Length: 168
Image (cartoon, rainbow, N blue to C red):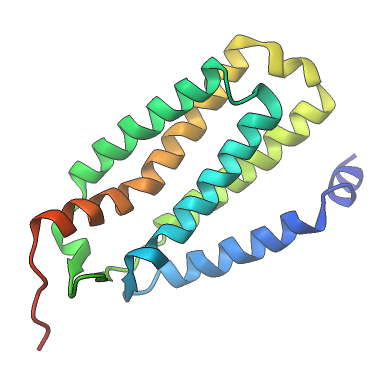
């Protein structure tokens, strides 16, 4: 059965996995990034979640509202708790970020979770009609996306409140 699941997985899924691993390894190192570059991964992960929600539950439904509100609340809470030394604004659009393995762990958790969700729904389509399953899935992925967006949120808060730091 596992061989059948893997062989029926579209090629683009494996390309996405390689991209996510590569970006996660990059995020593990201290680096300077623009706000635009910082947005790429959260937007990719947002796209994966929205695509899955639309495919399984429709975009005009309570799961989207539950997912979205969980994402916003989690993102706000995590952004408030981030340590200031994890990121420094060095120019109008450039930031120095401390390396972390957290983005890779989050991306792999979302990827594996979405993969498992798609397999489960392909095997038992009735799961998409069970409110408990849908609520848990929406809360889980909303929280993960919120943690992902927390860094972007923190950078946006930093850009509004801090002047660029002179680097010697």
